[in-house]
Length: 261
Length: 357
Image: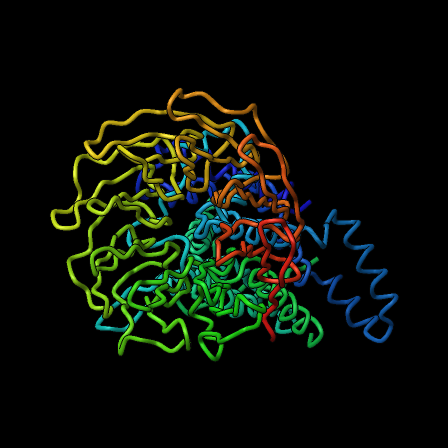
């Protein structure tokens, strides 16, 4: 099922883009970039709802009524949960709206990784699996084997640039950096020291760059290309909504006053 | 808050594990390679190369003694006349090594490590030189002590197949769809020939030229001058090397069809024969029988009329080309209960070999 729903369509989409780009040198990297843009466009409404949901949740943390019920029902968790649900309903907020796009990302990342390794077919067995994966309309005889070269990288292998005999994982660094930039820009401003949502976001801005950087260090560089393009597009999307918090990047933090109701 | 922090950490760790588990390291998955002489069979099966006594199916030695996660073996080992067993690693480290076939000890003081890519193809030995094709697209020339004897020849695409030779020239197929004729002294001869598809199998040497199957689902006849023509077609990709039997050329495709081409008339000797499952392995002609192994895990013998003489089911998937050792035919199934099985010409199983942990 995973094969039919995720791997096969993704692999075929990558191969199709690769084919229409002329399947020459560097085109598989371009295919991954176009694929990422396509995924971002398809998940744009989801991401937009994430932005909206995160913002609404953030505003709620500074809301007086919300803070009051936190204090009032601090020792009655059941009642607190009921009141929270009431406020969510009253304000039309979906508390899970900010989680969904993140959850959607996981099968895409895993599927893309498997699709890249399958499409590049490093061994005869991989090639045989690829032959079974492609849809009949694909002109697969012409396009395989794929050219895994993109700029200085072999997209089927982890990347490192040799500098003075030392293997510098430049892509892993760029992945970690762009992930950090994206998470910093999307970190909402908060003045509430007990704001759990802001603390979680802050933790994410530490863990996510480390985790994705680790992925980039250890896995095919094609997935790193996806991470970088995806991060940059995420920044663009945030900037387009006017919500990007640029001050977070330079150590300062824009503060807002708690909302009055 | 502590619970949420733990939850977040758990989710991120889960993501890391899922991604780690989904593919593993590159080049970690392939079927085994196989070679044999009169005493031993040599099977390259991932982390180890095993030497197996063909009299009883017992392990004689394994190389290396301990698992090295960066070294993997999948190519067919090659036995040389001067008593070496040659093979390269397909792992992230890719030394090209020479072993003593009797002991499994390394022959060379220093392994050749000049290639950039993995070794999936076996080398060819001709006139005291080793010609070793690599997935980096270069054909390396070594002397019999593992030293580079000439500059590597840049071909193109990954090289997965052993070069063939008529004693003078080398014939090399590539995944870049091209076929190369190489003069060992002067380098690439003529312009490479476009086969219309990747060619993972070696060319078969004929009387006046070579026969090459490819993913274009064709068999091309190519003369040393570079003249070439399609002499036969198939329903699906042709993976293995065609096999000669006098004036007949046998080949098979991924639909599992076995063909028998009469080279004199250009016609097929029998109608599409499709016994069981896709065929990747080379067909093996011994005496009056043609042996074929399928992805479905069956191994069978045909007579020259295309009639199945016997069929055995070793299990797993068989992609590795069967080889002969004395009176035995050796088969190495992939993902099966055992790694190697020996059959006589009547299909009687002599022994099986499963490596001890």
